[in-house]
Image (cartoon, rainbow over all chains, first blue to last red; front, top):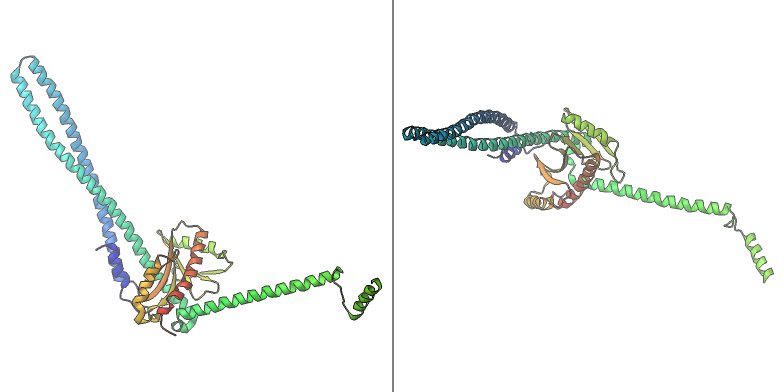
Length: 231
Length: 140
């Protein structure tokens, strides 16, 4: 079974009620055991790999030795032929054939080891990735459990004994209402500020004598008289 | 190790405000000090829980419980949530036990600005999401 599928089983847990454990602790324990097993398997695979690599090195040496011996004996055979000693040359040639036979065998062993090493390395990489993924996922599952507990604590603290009565839509309505109120308040504050701002400006204009400080009946009459006198 | 990282993040967040000046209040919320609760001012009903491990920073907010869902519209709601999931910026729907949640995940190497952005978006998304699925919830 894939890790995902196992986790899926673990988090389903069968819990449907608030307060019930959401993570099947037994399933998590099994997963953690599997994680440990994978780590052991990984170590075994690494030891195995080292052993095979060492053996391959031994065989590599043998192959090299045999190749050298073949070359050496080929020299001997040629020398024997040069001396006209057919018998000796044939004896050496037989030896060479023996070496070549052995070389073939050792080369086969060597290739076998090489492909085994590739497979093992691939397997180790895969296991390492699996271990990482498993560890990450177990950690997330445990985290969600902690978050669940925290949420229960928080909702109990926030809404007291009424937590069960407060629905998400109620909460949303309340938040919206609060937001509206806040917006209204800041709008009102802005309006007030601008009114105060104009008030302030009028006062300053009056002080500067730009706006008539006290427009009264007598001042209006004065102005009309001036206009008449000019006209 | 993770808890130290969480505490460090909390300390840095403590002095921060969201882009519109909204305040945050943050506290540890469990005995093991592994979950921080972040409350966005005026939205205290939907706290955001933050956890940190080697792999990721998780921010989770609870939407509503199974008991609030109108049973006749449950399948329809689930499908809408799946369909909506991809178009919600940075957050996704999920479920913990019998509770529907919304969450966002960040790299543990994220900056405080990125984390703040995540919190702000998640908080907005939660309100939007509840609004969007309210048709599938039980009538009050």
